Length: 177
Image 1 (cartoon, rainbow, N blue to C red):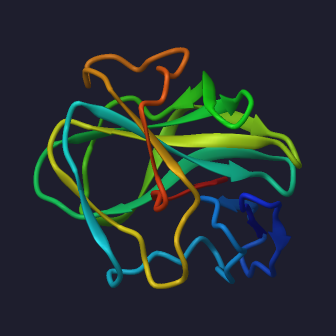
Image 2 (cartoon, rainbow, N blue to C red):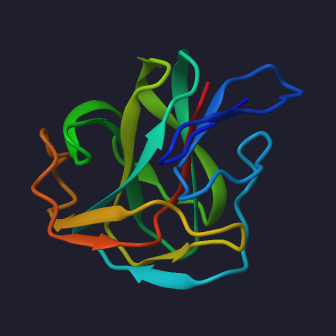
């Protein structure tokens, strides 16, 4: 298992022999099998009509087939995507789930096509939603910065639009194979 953070990744044991990169944290936190998601902690309403992205650095090279996301809400759709990094901002679209029916709590969403991530490379994992999703920052420390911008749900921007807002808490999101 691989833990990604704003300062690099930490290799962790993984009983399933799968590689995982977890949405970055200011300081690494111990998370096994991408299970650091929690229903307790600070919650923020993520309204529709925006794209949000948090950084993650892959500590190993592996093939991503799914994006795991934790949020709560009722009804609607989400799109989860992987973007490249350009000078600490999200840039080119690399892979996406396309529009998927949202399932409240922790859910794995299949990518439209798998994507090979490279060790030591920073990526940005994004969320788009067409309804209000509640984001939980968790009790294991704040996630790395999250950038947002207004965007219609019907499109998946490429490249990522110029970030207009940065918060100190990001998404509970990770990429898995």
